[in-house]
Image (cartoon, rainbow, N blue to C red):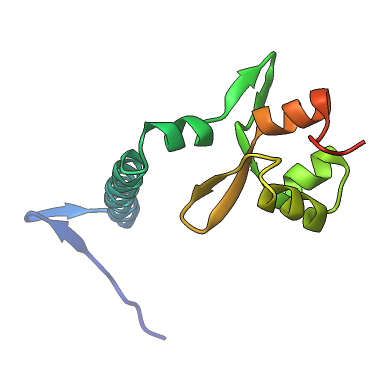
Length: 125
């Protein structure tokens, strides 16, 4: 049988293994946080390029205690209206329901959905 002895030094000072692990974890956490903050700032700067109208549509708003989105995708809008997504796409194509395009995404403003619920779809009996 043999014995192995490990000694850790930091700046010429002997340190315990636990201290070494704690320091490594703390440094890793700092680097990870800096990376996340940098990515978050990059995402916000990209969102600023969308323009104020797009940001307004993308930002959710508070309704009572619930957080509700200002826009939803086609499938969710169809579900909320109780119709098929293909039916909703036809109404959008005919200009009867307003949409917002952001890149390739097609989004339906909640105000358009609320208008259809209040007034119905124009030209339908």
